[in-house]
Length: 338
Ligand SMILES: NC(=O)c1ccc[n+]([C@@H]2O[C@H](COP(=O)([O-])OP(=O)(O)OC[C@H]3O[C@@H](n4cnc5c(N)ncnc54)[C@H](OP(=O)(O)O)[C@@H]3O)[C@@H](O)[C@H]2O)c1
Image (tube, rainbow, N blue to C red):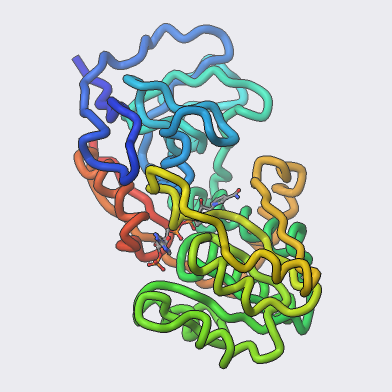
């Protein structure tokens, strides 16, 4: 009998997420007798997002926590292999939160329905350059951040899936862009591939000192993916009426206790700085426009991107951990083998 391989969450991580937080089990393949409206999908490519770490905690985030003993919640591009739903034909590819497993029966409707991947878009592109990270960048830097020509934009996590798109979209809007990333290689990509005007290697350089050199008149718009010390350094260099967009705070996702907040928040008063958090899910009305524009830029060769593709079912948990060591070189994906 064909089995449905699954990685399930066996315990909620305490602090640093570990391989032992997950267990591999073989379940029976979901019932082939589908009810009306249901489809049976087979995952082909998994996508990895830092937010999955937060979903493993007990109810502190914007989504229900993952259930213990269930396949880990995560995005995937999957093939429809049986269907009782005329909107999803067998052989088409869909994307959705199908989890760390081979097969799933999907019966969701409305906003939670699987999203059909256009036939001229590769599954890797649907999860990568045209996926949620790029949509987050598009909404976050434009709609939330209100980037405008002449802005001095700073972005952290700048060589990653969201950050590399933020840097490029800010440049397309006429901004000057400074990126912060870990290591010489990622900093080189920022300047040579993603069009940043300058890059700061937070692992080997003093971020505050470099910001003082690179942004002597201050930062107008800071797009933060990282939080912690980098957020504090950015607050210290914001211009009058500067805007901070909080997209993520990955430096703290594996903290057992929250780290103390930035020590220089009072500077936000004297410099009239504003700070706004956002979640892509609140901006789904903009997804059609954002998707169309990203596709146009991609077709025109305007956008550069990297996907880091790991392979094989056994490698799933270790692939997730790559996000937190910075081992991922671009959008982290994994191709499942038969
Ligand atoms: N608000 C939303 O709706 C939304 C949606 C999607 C993603 N996000 C957030 O956006 C951020 C980026 O996500 P992504 O998918 O684009 O991931 P990513 O940047 O492709 O990968 C994560 C990167 O974070 C960096 N990192 C890890 N630990 C760090 C630390 N302690 N200090 C500084 N940098 C660290 C590493 O880059 P280096 O090698 O440069 O250190 C790593 O490669 C995350 O915070 C995520 O939660 C938010």
